[in-house]
Structure formats: C-alpha cells, structure tokens
Length: 498
Image 1 (tube, rainbow, N blue to C red):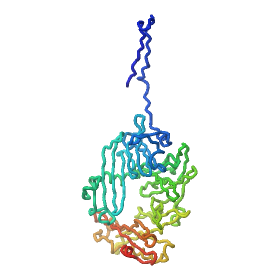
Image 2 (image 1 turned 120 degrees about the horizontal axis):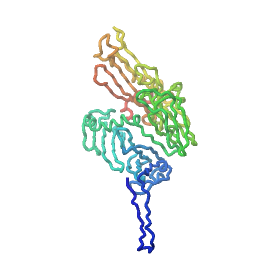
Image 3 (image 1 turned 30 degrees about the vertical axis):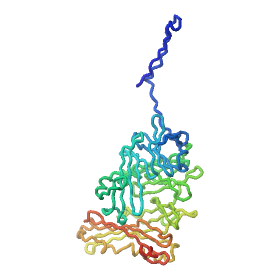
Image 4 (image 1 turned 180 degrees about the horizontal axis):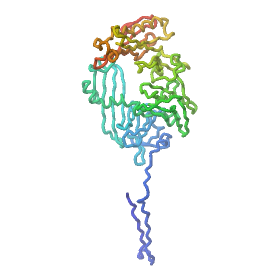
C-alpha cells in the first residue's frame, strides 16, 4: 500500500528570528484505512444523470444517443472481468458501456443483430443473421477486453445453394469474414462448430440475457428458473416487476414452471411491447409455455391468450412460441400455440396446433389449425407393432373460401398416406422382436401461409422416417398449394403462370 509522505514544516531561528523550537506537522499514516472502490451506478446512467464517453471521445447521455426514442438495455459481463457492463440497443446500434477508474466509457459499438454473451464458459458478443434468397445464416463471435480491444473474431456462414430447404453437402460454406473462400461441409462443421453450436445450444435457454425497455419497468425477476436436472418446482412461479422508481409488483402465474427467458414483443399489435415470459412446464424443456404481461398506466396485468381459441380453451396448461403472421398485406405479431395431448409414444408432439394474432380489437386464429392422425400397424402373424405413424393435418377455417370442405379433403389426402406399404422397413426384426425395432414415420407441418395476398394457401411439411436398422433418419420437405377461389389443388408453377 502507498504511504503519504510525512510533511515537515521547520521554522528555523534564522528565518523567524525567534528562539522557538521548530514546528513539525505530520499527516496521519493511512496504511490501515480501507480503500473504497466505487461501483458502477448503472441506474444513474439509465436515469440520464450520468454521462459516458463514446468511441469518438465525445460525452453522451442515454438521451443523446442516436435513434434512442425506443431503446433496450441489459447488464452482462461481456469482457469476462466478473463485473457487469451496461449494454444498450437502440433502433440502429448496439453499445457496450464499461466502468473503469471512475470513468464510464463505450468500449464496443456494433450492429443491432449482436447480443452480449455472459456464460460461465464464454464471454463476448455474438451476431446471428438469417437471410433469404437463398436461405442463409451468418455467425460471428467477438471477444474483447475491458479496454475495448478486440482479442479475437470468428466468422461462419452457410447458404442453401440448391434451395432444397436444408443445409447439406451440396450447399456453400464459409469461415472467413468476406465469404471469399468456400469450404466443404465437414471442414465448416469442424472450424465453425464452436459458434454455430453456440447459437443452437446457448440462446436463449442455457444462459439467457434479459433485455429491458425504457417503458417504466427497470427489472423483471422470478422465483423459479429452468432447472435441467428435473428437480421440479414446488411452488407457483411468481413474476416480480420493478419500476423505475423502485416500487415492485408481484404476479402469481398460477403454474409452477421454470423460466427460460424474457422477450419484449408487441404481441397485441398496439404499438407497445408486452413482456413474454417463456418457461418449461414440468421440467420438460421442449414443453414451453408463454406467459404474457401488459403494462398500462403503471400497472402490470397478466393476459390469458388461450381463452380466445375454442381448440385450446379448456387446457389447464398450454405451450406457445413467438410467431409472425403475414395476412392481407399486413404483418402481425402472433403466437404459435398448442395444447397438450394424451401421453403416447409421440409425447414430444401435441394434438392441436394453431397461430393466433390480435387485430380489430380481438384475437383471431390465423387460417386454421392442425391436428394429428396417429396410426399403428401390427403384424398379421404375431400381432406386435411393426410401424407407427404420426401425421399432422391442416384444417382450414370457414370464411376463407367457399370451397373450405373441398380443400380440407384435398389436404387430408395430401398429408396422409397408407403407412405400412409406404414406409414399412423391409429390414425390420422378425416376429417376436417387432416391439423393439419397429419403424416410425412422421409428417409434420412446419409452416402455413397465404401466397399472392389471399388467393392461395400454402402448407409446408417435413417428413422423417426413423428406421431401426438405419444409421440416421431419412428426411424430406415438400409444399402443397390450394386455390381458395376455385377449391383446386395447384402447383407452384401454376401460381407463377396465372
């Protein structure tokens, strides 16, 4: 520890002409006085009371950042120094503000597609962009230190060059910043595996980063976080909202579930974001429930979306994920919802699915919903199950076409098959061993939409056959089109030729 130097003030007789002894004043040694390290006051920054230095060395407040009329913020240890930084995302830019040596300073400025990473095994900034024509994905991971120096950057991108809906060996892969040097798929997986698997396995469930908005709520917390060990939750999940003034409001969701992440989305399309809390019901991470909370006049209320749709009205619990609806030239925020079915061998899937969105003052079911057709095929000789099939069939709602019944019959024919002769595995085990080595077949709806504004219904499906003797399942994808004005089945070429 540094010591303050003792200061001696000596008044000599020669200088004073007095016979007094020299006067000595000594400052107190502060070796045992504790050093107080000032912590960052991020509330002061968010309250617009504390300035910070930008990369251009100019002073800013949150209110003077470009395009800051609506911004989001979160705290995360981006540089790995075990102290949080303040991350702010405006409509156009992403900032990381650090506090060191009593100074608040921007150490990183980037794209709105970037996210802070604060995980036990990884710290930094991650970028993920998904594009089209053809379908493509771009990844970037940046490591920085607390001075804002970039330590390393890793890039990866891939393009569905053959436009078959999946990334396979025939597509284009890159691991450089400019997509200048193509690599083959095995090389890409080897070199890009770190950041590619990161978006697959990290966000948003393992180490969620909680974004908040400048809407009057400073923080949202909960008593039950997702526990992958499967220990369960003995009490209902309570969501606590903390306002900018420090006051709190507790809301009991009525369900014991593990929270995985928080999103801010304008789910009812009124121009203001709602809080969507995603959680795993019953320790099953694939069984996700969305609880939605609306802030109005300083009070938060929970909104129950499931009561508006007959098909899921009576469900005690429901699952939901964020979705987007393109309808009559408009884009709506929506929820893809399902209600749990009976526990079967297909317990990863549900028996009812739909997308709902809010417009004209009420909730609507978009186009229709899908239901499963589940079959089991048994051996004529021994009676054991030889094959199981799970097929999702879309049901168009009345009001979209005068040919609804006719179109639904075509959809049923297109999306179901006579399973046994079509998918039966010739290499299945003989009688007595069917139950352990049967074949499973799936046909699942991946999307449905309107094409050419409102005239054509498009249904996208994904097939998968799991053969007991095969090293990997066989997969395929296909789209079906129906003319809502004529009730006919058509092809994609027919649409382009109209």
